[in-house]
Length: 145
Image (cartoon, rainbow, N blue to C red; front, top):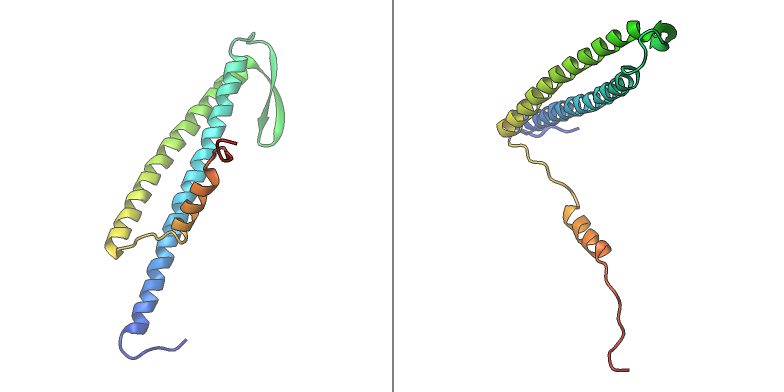
């Protein structure tokens, strides 16, 4: 790497630092999205379990996985724990959504501060290809034969 006279070398380094910071912020945001989706799926599973065992006899035996160990309980014992876990997951999701909104705002401010614009390479060519590829029609021969 050669350094040019003046401030050009420092400016290039600063641009690289800004780009790296921006990329890491975007990565953090994507990780939050992924984790929220994962937890929402767990809440959905908890809801299915609650819906399946609520109408059953409370003295009936059921099995519950606790820390990788399958434990036998009654529905009366297991149902409140499953409901508590679901509520806890919903609270965590709410906090993560707040963190996601803060991260979005932080990224937007960062974009405005450093005048960052995302350029999608080859976007026009892709759109043209999609328009041609998705066109459906009927090929008709010459009329009047």
